[in-house]
Length: 449
Length: 94
Image 1 (cartoon, rainbow over the protein chains, first blue to last red):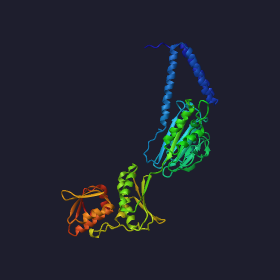
Image 2: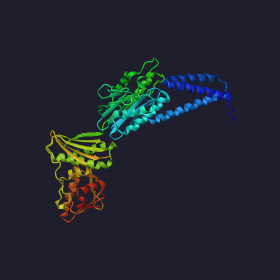
Image 3: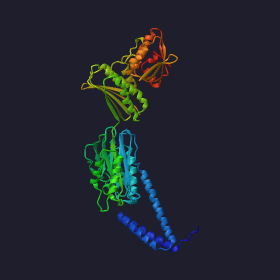
Image 4: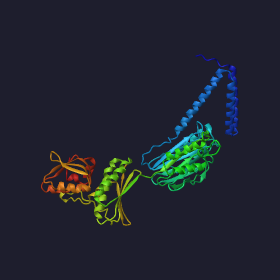
């Protein structure tokens, strides 16, 4: 295929026109009015399209089409890169995980200014959401920078206020003073449900507690990130009980509009989440998305939508009450087996834990022959450490710390007594005995991961 | 549950779990022994101090006649328990 030569006249004219346009755009940027630069671009694009439609030069049209295609292609690529910066919103965790999380993002255009991030270790879950003011490529770049800063400072496990302060200071140094980011950050202690949080001018999240109406989490709003270099963000605190959750969202949710230009509003959002109650984060997020879409009746989305929903589930724990009878041992072993079947615990530890449960259980049965009450066995996990706790209700104090049996004597001098507790103390990492309110409790610990 | 049977070579074959709820059944078998035996632990998954007590009592009785129990095919967990208890000094363990 041969291509016809471009006429020099139209080449020069295009060049001149382009120079004039760039000058105009730079001028409006210098005035500090980004939105008029954007408007200007729109007008120019419309004019160019009109001219092209009148233009009978097939080559010019082909070139313009090609440019447009390239532009579209690079936007698609930018969009992909932007979405890949965010952790996948669908997070599959084992059933016994101390938390569940689900995130959602849908930019209004190919590239957006909303962001979220989250990551965790055995002790804590850190999560945040943000919304860059303005739209377009500038907002997308600031979004990318903010996301990167959150992750970079996040690894230090700062409290959320300190994290916001660190990100704020860098954004002030490195971005245009007209760009702001509203953000909300949380740090959830996975061992006790304590939630630390801090707010930089963002919509307060919803808090979902069982038996209570869904409400906005009380928070003192600081200024948006990038607005004031040395602003001191404050850290606030609440406690999530197992089952409780929080829903972080951007204003694209509450400000989604329908054909009659009504807004979805915080009230509709509260209604939907109230209907869900304390449920799976993925369910709550999907219900909100469906409700917003149903409300919008196909009206095109004008702002980015993002959500992060977290549910605290607590550490895995199982307990059961048993009759004071040796024949209950099979059921005690069954409880231990079910705890190990959750897959959170190294099965190598199963033997020592079974042995500990049996020895202490039989000890309670034998040494408290007049005991009328039941024996409770409880298993829980705190980080890497399994705790096995047996409570003898209505028991006299017994000497848990008595001298260990002598195990290096000749056979004739060996007695079986005391061997059980000795074995338990040897095979488990540590042991505690408490006697309170007439009940005796032995707790044994073992590292299991 | 604990199952105790005599193998074709007259070994005692233990299968299952030797815990405190199985002591009565096992004691009957072990205290009736009049001669030394090889006790096969191949199918034994678990033993607690209650089971060890039965073995100890049998070993003491047999030793008065110059006889003993020999434990074979012991899994690693049970081997640990025997060692922690000092039973590796009073039983031959293969």
